[in-house]
Each structure stands twice: as C-alpha cells, then as structure tokens.
Image (cartoon, rainbow, N blue to C red; front, side, top):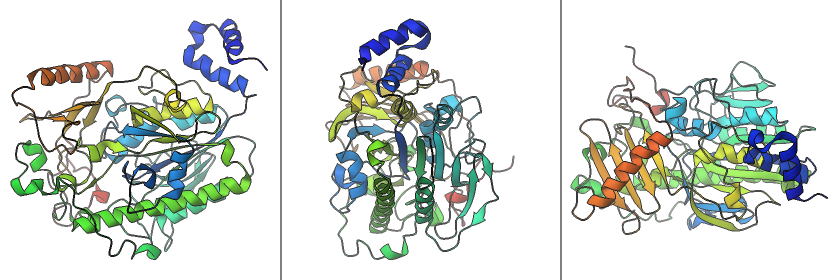
Length: 502
C-alpha cells in the first residue's frame, strides 16, 4: 500500500497544491489511504449540558456511563467553550462553523441562517453521506429548507409530553403531528434507532440533539423521585446577591436569571435544590438515550466504524452567582463538554487542554469524513489535537452576546478569554467592564477592572478584543430585540418568545 506521503505527492502533482490547499490534500490522502471508506458519524448535542455533568469529568452525584464511553474511547477536551451562550446562535455556529456576527443568527429573535452559508450537513450530503437530524435546532425554519435524508424535529421549543413534531424523508416534510404521552427525548431516540435500522449503502451522519433539560423542566415519569435525599452543595458564589454583587457591573446585578425570582415566570427555578436535581436528571436521561443508540450500533457491528462527537449548545448556571440559565460570560455559562471518539484515528483516553470552541465542530465533522473544509469557516478542525499532534492553536478567543432586552434581561456584551484572564465588556451605555484572573479566582468573584496593578493587562486585553473583532470581520451593529424589558412578568415564558409589533 502506498504511504500517506506518496499519496500527498501524487495528489499535489495531479491537482496542484495551490489549487487544492493543504487541508484538502490531507483529506484526500486519508480517503485514499483508507481505501475510500468513510466512517459513520454521530453528533450528539445536549441542551445546556455542562462540562462537569458527566462522571468522566468528575461529577460524583450522577452516573453517565454511556456518555463517559465517548471520553473513555476517545479524546476529552478539558477546555471547551461556546462563542455565544444562547441556544439558537450557538446551534447556528455548530452547523456553519461561523460566528453569530458573521451569519446574522445572533439571538433567539434574530435567528435565520442565510442560504449563502452552507450547513456542515449539506457538505457531508454532497460528499456521499446520508444525513439525519432529530431533535431541537431552534433555528428559524427548523432546518426544513435543507434536504435531510431523514428529519424528525420541531419548531422552537417542545412540550415534554405533548410534542408536536415534523417528520420528513429526502427533503419532503409532512404536516407536524402531535405525539401525546411519550417523553420527547425518548421519542427522538426511538426514531433515531429506527432510522439506524434501515438498510443503506452509504455512510451516515446523524445529528441527535436532545431537548432535556430545557426549562421549564419536566422529568421522565420513572425518574421523578431520582436524587431524593441527596444533598446539593451550595456554590461558593451563591450568595453574591446578598451584597448586590459588590464590585461588579450593574449589568450583572440587574440580570433576571436568578434562582428563586419570578421575572421569567415558569422558566425560573424556585430553589437551588430543584434546579440542580432537575438538571442532573435531564442529563441522566440523555445518557440512557445515548445508551440505546450505542446498543443499536453494537447490534449491527458498526460501533467500531462510527465516530462520535459530543458537545452542548451552552453551559448552564446551577446556582453560581445565584444564577441559572446562561448568556453571561462566566465560566458555568460558556464552558461545555467537547469529546470526540474515532477508533483508528483517536487514541482511547486522550486529553487535551487547548481551548476549543463550538466554532470548531463543523470543520471537525468534515475532517472526520475526509471532506475539505469550507474556506469561509472561522473554526478549525480539532482532529489534529485529538490525534495527539503538536499543532499551533489559538491562545485567546472572542465571545459575543446580543439578545436584549428580553428574557433574562442580560445586557449585550463582548469579551476575550485567554488561558488565564477574561475581560468582559458590556458595550451598551452605560458601558461597564469585568476583569478576572481565572488562575487566582476560578469562581470569578473578584472583579479586577479598574484596580491598581492591572492597567497593563487590561489595556492588552482591550486591544486584543478589538483585534479579534477585526480578525473575524466583526462589523455587526447591535440592534435591540423589540421585546419588553421584562417579558416574563405577568405570565410569559421563554418558549413563547416573539418580537413585539412595531
């Protein structure tokens, strides 16, 4: 068999290195070196799944053996993040490899992906993959303008026990149907397994994107008593609200996403214990559903030929800073699990500490499939890291959040995070800043902005924030959502998010 180097030399001579590009040559070489076989791909996305909600990442209160398997048999990235901690924008970034400010899918209100931006699923389908999407996309149009080989999803949010779901085959979609009585993620998983059982002569890429534990959360009926009697530790920063967030911006103190408040009505948890236990139970249910998929892959003997990528649309506050939900640029909100399993290319039990982003997911899926990345994608494939290679990687990255006013009442912000420092800029007047030393203050309780001795690092991070905006071609101009400041007061819920008429 020809060596990989021989294949690269041949391809360079045949198509021209400058025309194909190194990434394209690498992808073609891998395909040629493997006899043209492509792996199946499973992309699992949690709803607010935190990086530390798995046994594999240190959680002692719940067991997640099926999610842990991805880590045990693959690579765990210890520093995974999202570039916009909100459902719709994050999911758009996963599918396009683009920043929110690039696509314009910047919030749950402004959430359409323009047709000029191809989805990673479109590119995989063009490369010979059967593609399936099951679950929550949240994208305007619910991705139904794309010709999925199989589709089972819903517009916006779902009802846990009375979901209304659209089914489609080969890009043709039926009228949405009510599925009463079956827990929504159980239903999604059942449909996923049924689709896997169909005969096919192509590799597949399945996107299985769960709904639980989205608020207001309802448990599966057999888990309603789970974690009863288990003590829930109080986060170190839980009582910051007692002193009205002393030393922090008013943008933080005025945010509505606090445990025990009622500004967001039914979405708001009434106690820390309720919040944490319900969230954990949702993760337990995610785990057993992934277990059902593993079981089917093993039954068919194709688990060894299937690559798995696991992540989440954002993290989730579980009482840190007295918060729930996400949006703010604090660690519980922006950190997510990121794991990739690919037998043959990724050594079992690999760990990496580089900062990887949801921006990197689309290029990674293409790399796994041996498909050259779209040249406009702003992320990078994580596969060289997962394979244990020494490669140049980002030292910092840009965060952005725009949905305001509206649910949770979190003011728009941008920020830059390095491996040690974080600068947050609330850029709507009155402008405010936060600066944290994550090594000395991992709980982000001591805002260093404006304090003596931090002038140089502050100036450097401000310069880097503007540089990152230029590098990512960020010319987006923030526009208010058109929603009232406290839309939840008086009986609303985030699932009913709509733009107010002008």
